[in-house]
Image (cartoon, rainbow, N blue to C red; front, side, top):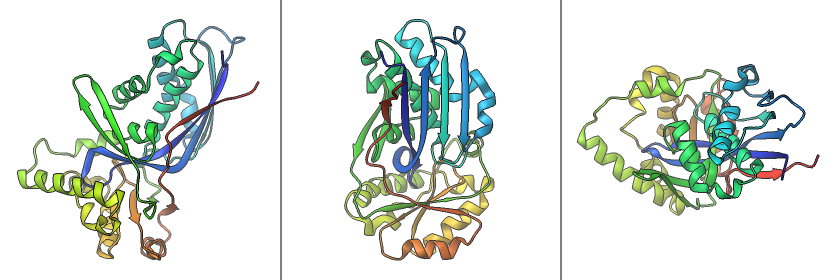
Amino acid sequence: MTRAVRVRVPATSANLGPGFDALGLALTLYDDVDVQVDTEMADSGLSIEVSGEGEETARRGEDHLIACTFRSAYALMGGAVPSLRIRCVNRIPHARGLGSSSAATIAGILAARALHPRGHTFTDDDVLALATRVEGHPDNVAPCLAGGLTIAWQTPDGARLTRLEVSPGVRPVALVPDSRLATERARGLLPEMVPHADAAANAGRAALLIAALTGAPELLLDATEDRLHQTYRAPAMPRSLELVERLRGKGIAAVVSGAGPAVLALTFRDGEVDSIGAEVGTSWHIHPLDVAPHGASVQPIDQ
């Protein structure tokens, strides 16, 4: 049985404007997580080392998200949970709307599946179901698991996803501020009800966005209009919404990334990345990325 694995998990951007809690995009920015079963450590012992983003999370010990999801998945497969050594090299910004918690959740579950003697019985549907229960919704865990553009939804039997290829001309640019925002706070600003006209408009734009991303990128500006969540969240991230509006005024399809406060620009024309740099100045970290064609991957580590 494999005793150590490395899990590489991509950043993700959910919602993409009108696709609230349904659409997600995998991005070429990755965390690497090494997980080793340690037979010399005390039963259920744990050692965590974190470098890069979120170094302070190593102090959480058993409450660290990767440790929690590993133990949950391993227990579901049966048997005593082993002692672990976890090493994280994090590049995905935390609490910015780029899927860092979904990446950690998927990393923990996939490591458990790879290291459990009966891990082959734990299907991708099982991974998606558990990750959705941990996260509360599947819009980020779906692209993290599958790569590309995903549509995720809930059924009485659990979460489901389908994956689509993105037009090769589309290039995402993540604009990341220094400030953070908890997803819970951003969700707390959403109203219980929205006008029927806004819901209808978003349904049309979400359908249009699929067409734009998969073959008609010239439609991206219209396709990324949103009436369901971004404006309501403005009090928590006014700079993000101001940047979104400024970029859209220049013809660039910009949206709040996930729950924010990062902004995602979906570019496809020559020179758009340079235009973004001129608009945002030095107060945002600019990350030109690609759509990640593959989701999370697992490789054994030689010992």
